[in-house]
Image 1 (spheres, rainbow, N blue to C red):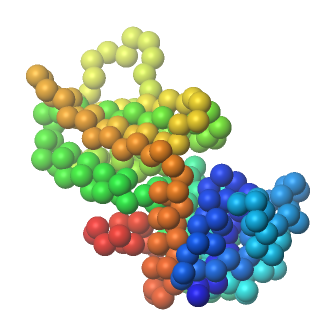
Image 2 (tube, rainbow, N blue to C red; image 1 turned 90 degrees about the horizontal axis):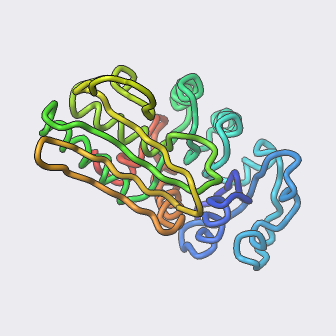
Image 3 (cartoon, one colour; image 1 turned 135 degrees about the vertical axis):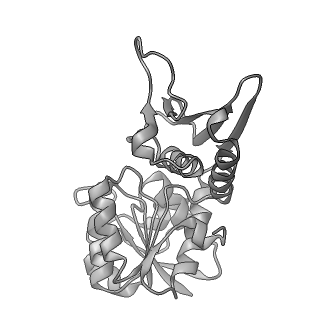
Amino acid sequence: MIRTIVCGAAGKMGRRICALIGEDSELTLVGAVEAKGSSAVGQDAGVLATGISNGISIKDDLAKIIDEGEVVIDFTAPDATLSHVRVAADHKKPIVIGTTGLNNQQIKEIEKLSVIVPIVLAPNMSLGVNILFKLVEDVARTLKDDYDIEIVEMHHRFKADAPSGTALKLAEFAAKGIGEDLEDVAVYGRKGLIGKRDPKEIGIMSLRGGDVVGEHTVIFAGLGERIELTHKASSRDTFARGALRAAKWVIDKVPGLYSMQDVLGLK
């Protein structure tokens, strides 16, 4: 059994991950972490996840329990994630990161730490979305400048970051397909008298409302026709199961920065 620690154990994703670890024949939960000052600290992770005790008390410091585990799964917030990656690197423990909203500086530090320890960094861990990444790049490469690329994502009203990490990754794959750097062609929403659309633009639009788990559509709009590639998640379990798959995969890998494309063998 792979001894697993979950950071963000009281969050929506963390609870599902803890619950599914309890059903998994290859993983066992040995630690759970939440932010200092959280009302969840000291509570039973099993009770929070499923209503049934698993004897794992939620702690507020990964460093104090990391030696009990073999792999860490982190779904927290950018600053917390970076702190947890530093701890994982210090203790030579592989880590799976599902946190979104990381800035370029944080990602660069994670890249540096991946020289010490294997890290899976993925904005979306579902099989379907990762197949969509590949499809988007292939379609963009085939259609090139004859079709305008627009991305629309929608999530629940509580999501803190926008655009979603998945939408940004879809945009990166689209930009790669047309041979462009996303920073040069991305347009985040539109307002006012903006003029004619640049053929190389990749539009990224964010919608928020209700309890939507996650929906992403990539539109290739040509003259006379439109191609739409859509992924809709109806349950967080698709992401949680992907995180468990990543944890099993990364446990024996050499140091490096990996994606779900690596985990799923899509590269």
